[in-house]
Each structure stands twice: as C-alpha cells, then as structure tokens.
Length: 201
Image (cartoon, rainbow, N blue to C red):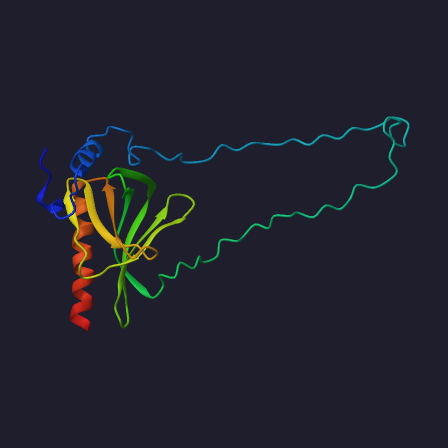
C-alpha cells in the first residue's frame, strides 16, 4: 500500500505496513469519551453511643484519651501553577494521542494529552513542542524545533522527527488528532514557529 508523500522521507523497510495498520485501527477514541459533569458525593453520618449509668463501658475499658493525630497530607490550594511557559507565546494547542516508532518499526502508544507549540518572546526566539498527559499533567514531550524537522500530515496523523537528547539520534513520533484539520493546523504552527525565528535573527 503506498503512503502519502508527506511520509516518504521517513519510511523504512517494513514501516509502511505498520503505519497502515495503526491508521486502520478501530480502537475507541479519546475524543469520544464524555467526562462526568459532577462526581458522585458520599455522605458520612457519625453516631454516638451512650452508656447508661455514667462512666465508661466495661468492655475494653480504657483510661487514656484519644491521641491527637495530625494529618500527614497537606492539601494544596488553588494557586497559580508554574509551567515554565510564562515567557512564551502559544501558537497551537490541541488534544492528541502520541505514538513513538520503536526499533522494530512498530508504533508504540505513549498515551493521550494536550499538545502545545510555543515560541519564546525574546532572543533567541526558540520554539518547542510540549505535551502533557491528561489529568496528571505529566510531561510526555518537551522538544525544541529545529530547521531540519520534517513534518508530514496524513489524514488525522502528524508525523515528525526530533532529536533524542540522550542518544542524539532522530526519533520518529506520530500525533493522532481528532480531525484532519487539526493535524494540518499543527503542521502550519511548526512552520510558523520556525519562520518567526528566522525573521527575527
């Protein structure tokens, strides 16, 4: 099966079939799920037991008072959460599922989350792709964009390569967005971010 031209520079032996099988998967989409409007609330009723005749119960009679137990968990207030994106302009944001191309040319599911493309407001005007997991906000991706990056779009999929900071090798990744339009919007944002850096240098 021939792939779209946007992916021709990435294809390896045996990789086309792997991508085709991924694109044809009919697993449930994260975009089809509905979040509950409100969580269920449980009510706890306390009860008191009185002993007739005064004094304490003869069963398990204890003279010590209950210890003053202090909570070991401190709840954090709803203050501002620092993301280290405060000095950057966001030019794209969208929910997606992340896949990484493994050594056996198979796509590995890395989970779902929010993809953001940011550009620094001051020199050197660098740009980066950031992805955080749903609910936990765990950092799934934080990579600088570079001029040699090649992003290709096929339907809802955006494929690109970034340099692994540990191995110094280019690793291929794939975003699956909710719509083809969102994938095209992400690719356009990558182009815009790199052009902005060149124009300000």
